[in-house]
Structure formats: C-alpha cells, structure tokens
Length: 494
Ligand code: SF4
Image 1 (spheres, rainbow, N blue to C red):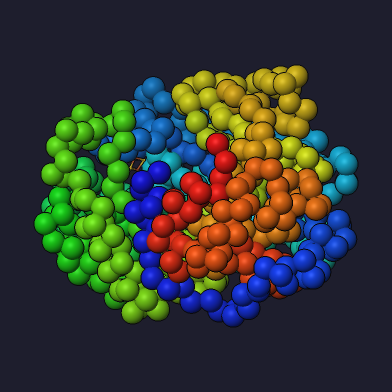
Image 2 (cartoon, protein in one colour; image 1 turned 90 degrees about the vertical axis):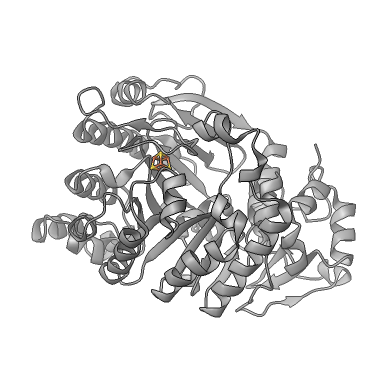
C-alpha cells in the first residue's frame, strides 16, 4: 500500500477536455448517464486478452512474476503453447459469456497484450499464427459487415500478417513486452510483420551499474539503440519501461533523472512507464536486502525523485495519465492497461494468468486464475472437458485452477481503487452503476464506501466531481493524487 502512495506523488495534471468542476448541490440536477438506452451502454461492452509467455532466458533477482527459465528440452515448445492458447480461444468463442446469450451479441475485442516472462523469446511465427487466430475469432466485426471475406482475403494476400496489422486490426492494440537482451532489428521487424503494433521495451535503466545490480543481461547502450529502432519500426507506438530505486539512485537522484530518463526522453518516445523497485517476498533480492535498508530509498527521496521525473516528462511533453504512466497524447496511452484501470473485462491465458469478467447482464463478476505450472496449464487448456463448468456457467474454456465470484464490495473497491489512479478520468458514475447493478447508485449513497468522507475530501480539495461528456466523474485532484493511498483508505470500508 505504501508503494501506491510513493508512486502517487505527482504534479498538476493537464486536463485536455477542460471539464467543469460541479458543486455538490448541482449534482442531483444533472441528467444521469443511466438514462441512456441499455443497448447504447452495452454496445460499449469490450474485453481485452492477455497472453502470458512463461519463460525467460535468465531470471532477474527482483522478479516475483510466475516465470521459468527456458529449458527447451523440458518445457512445452512454442507450438505446444500455441495449441494451448488456440484451444482456449476456441472455447472462449463458443462460451455463453462471449456469445452473450442474454442479449445476443458478443463483446468487442479492445486490446491484446503479450506479457511474461519474456514473450519476445517466442518465435514470430507463433505470434503470426496466434494473432491470425485471434483476429479471425474476435476481430473488429465492422469489417465483416462491410466485407465478409476480409480476413481470409487479407491472410491470403499476405501470410506474414502485415496486411492484417494494417487493415484488420487497425483499432485493436496488440502490444508485446520486448527484452532488449533479445531484441535485434530483425526481431522488431518480424514481430511487426506477425501483427504486433505496439512495443513495450523493458529498458529499466541506461546505467550499466543499475543493470548489473538488477541482473539484466543487456547494456544501457543496447537498450537505447533498440528503443530508437523500435520507435522507427512501430511509428512511435512504443513504451519505454523504467525502474527506479536502485542503490545508485539512492546516492544521487540524477543517476536516474539525468542518466536514464533524459536520454530516453531525448529519443522522442511517446510513452513511459515508471516503476519503483520493490523488494518482494520469495525473490532472491528479498533474502539479500530485506535487512539491509541502505539499499532501499526512503520515502522522502522517492517523493523527490518522482516529482523530478514528472517535471522532466512534462518538459518533454509527456503528461501523467496514470500514477505510473506518461503519454504524449491520448492516442499514445496504453489501451490495454486502461482496460484494467477502468474495470473492463479481461481474459488472461497462460500459466498463472488472471481474468476478470462480468456476466452478461453485469449482475456479477468473476476472477479466474489459470494453472501456474506451464505443464499443468497446457494439459488443462488442451483437454476437451471443461474443468470447472459446474462451478461456473459463465465460462467453459477450462485451464483455470480457481474461479472465484467477486463480492459486490470487492467489486466496488476494485473499481474505485483502479479508477482513481487515472487523474484525468476517475470513477465514472455510469460505470459505477453498471458495476454495482444499481441504477440509483451515486458517489454519495452506496453501502460500500464512506460517503461522508468523500464529501469531506471534496471540501478539502483532494477529490472533485466533474461532468464530462454527459457523465459524472469522481476524480483525485492534483493534491489528492499525491496522497492517493490515504484517500483510498479513507473512503473504502473494510
Ligand atoms: S525478464 Fe522479466 S519476467 Fe523474466 S525474470 Fe526478468 S523481470 Fe522477471
């Protein structure tokens, strides 16, 4: 929780839509978004797909993700992974959830993300086949209406997927995490031809001492070179992912701000993700540094470093759209991550991947976790009989080790926590009503939040309610985002 406060330190947010703050007494007189027709609300029903690639070349000592060192003799091959992913996709496309048996139309695919592990270890051929399969199964149906044969035509015209990436998935963001160690100009090109249209480069730092400390195998120069090439190859649809809080940053903030962040911004990159190094249980770093606080920056240092980063990003035209993320324009924001922060349904496929999705009439929400060991996940995903069909009528694609209903309270907590991370969007009243299945819900009268504290925090200038595009939004103010964790503690009930 503390890290949320740490990462919440920020400077003023540029609001491009210039919404007007409204006063509380005006609140009840506004037309509520629930007055829109249910069809128009549901037409926005979207989902995202996440693919977990579980292998890494070498394991980093700070990493707490579910990952396995690549051992080609024991682990499933790329094409076995592909068959498991494809089996799951077919089952999803036949599920009652996807086919929306209540209303009769399936949700739109919003984004696809290949994460890991190290997904860039996978072969471009595997991704080409997988992306082709995804788009055939879930692609933008507008194309089908205009030209029913557009997918097969595109595949035939260009088996590399280039045509697909340009025509078929123009609106579907397809991102991949790229480790600079494995990236070559050819890999970048091949992944683009396979259909990837956004690259997220795991740079972490440009200083070789930081990279050595983090157990990374690439140099700063290598990372910068790949970033520059990726920006050209992907027409600017690239994120540089950085990590701060290493011993060198502890000695001097400039070790991060001037040595890593500024040269990266100089490349003209249009998206940056900044994460703090956290020492997590179960990692080699936890054993090494848990008792050695000298290696962990204190809160004041972190706050100063974070403010300096925000200032520098702003100097280069990147604004903070989420506590850890910066973009040059709304088109550069990561659509996939926004799905998480906006409570949009997402399905994670792969060992240990999570899914969260609502049933067709939004009356309940489920969390699913897939089997964490690649072999178990592979076996369960490729077997015909659904594993948990009796437990859950919503899903029948199997490969899940656990399916848990999310209680209304957990659901609201999730929605509030993630939505307030986005200072320019905040918590939408329309979403609140949809997710609580309560057409009368407001920011100030529901049983799961401390509504009197919301009113106090509005008076204290930490939260505000603004009207934007016919909807009301509860947002953290510039001051509020700096102490977001405290704000959340105040308003969420145990
Ligand atoms: S490459 Fe990424 S997923 Fe693999 S061990 Fe390092 S941080 Fe973890």
